Image (tube, rainbow, N blue to C red; front, side, top):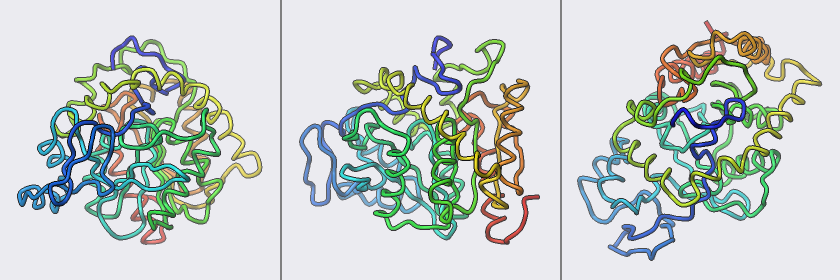
Length: 338
């Protein structure tokens, strides 16, 4: 994440958010010692060839560490499941138990959320996913993608994975746009929301506080997640697909505003936490946008990630975990946010 990166609002385009990457290459371990040829992915992801140590680690919810230890530099089996999303498969990784289910719709890779997911799994079920064309997920058959298609894809994925409401949607950057559009279409399933550094067009004096080196951004992630991120970012097509998605992202940013035309408070009294990144929090138009987001619900609260630029899930994960916990608790207790 160098300072030379381009931005579409707050959507980073020099680092892959939707990289077009085929399946893992090289050898993959399957039950019984079977192997897959290059370019194919196990239909039973996350299972490894006869390692009692690995199985013990997986039971502890640390499968990412096991994943890296068992795979070479060009073969990383997915920790979750490949789920049909409408004629193609996407990678869905769920941990934890109990309701509501926290569904993360964040920019970046699923493992970029490892800090948030590991902590959230201690108090409820939480899922991350990789959109079409990203790491283990199949390429989408529809080109170019559409906003409506992305929302239908998420819904189909959840249905086929046996996940229904109540849901807490956690959207970061362009993922915040998708979370709002999903709630507008499937509102009865969504009982709460966390919006982190919502994508948009904001003025800021310079990129110094926002754009950080890859080392600075990844340094708090577990070593295994850092390794996965570097592997994924180095894959063919990873550096160009983010740029090609700019028209798609701009379209969705424009369309999400229509969800408040009929009703300015589409979430009603459902709990909503809006998280601002520490660098942008002082920007006047950013503050205006944040205030507008708080108006989406009568039961909303603002938080700031003081130690973060745009990559809040990696740079200030504790703030997001706290936001998620407050929304989950409010739903369980049928209470207003404190």
